[in-house]
Length: 161
Image 1 (cartoon, rainbow, N blue to C red):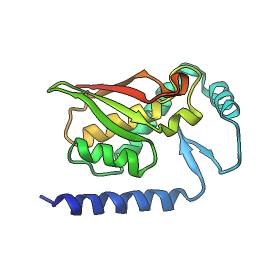
Image 2: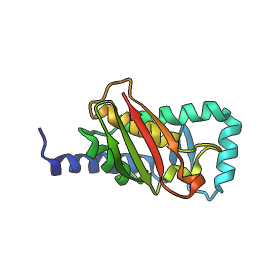
Image 3: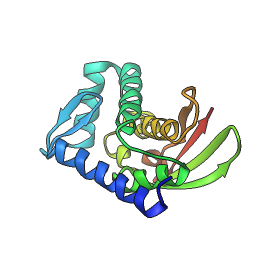
Image 4: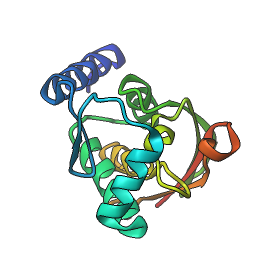
């Protein structure tokens, strides 16, 4: 088993590799969004028009799961570390049990380009995928129960398995 510092080095390497492959192009739900300046509303309108609101949310969630599969996570602390290192937000465990975990994510990046209701489906999918990489069952589901975009506070996610 790798020491904690060795695991963090491996995660850092994975992050650098993913970022260098992406370059200045960010892929969300299979869409390439360049670094051109676009307003949040323009991005939302474009994505919702392209996919429809329900399909968009599902696609973003699946993309988050898929993106998380590129990284190694062996426990919940690795999941929180990845969220922060990848710039998705700063995660904190609010509650944890054998069948679920509640996370608060402050500075949630996905609020910037989210959907018109709860906009952090990519982050929810990423958390689900990272938890599965950390050994949680394939049936792990994550839902956003509070979105910082609307209340101006942190997002809250509930993961259950």
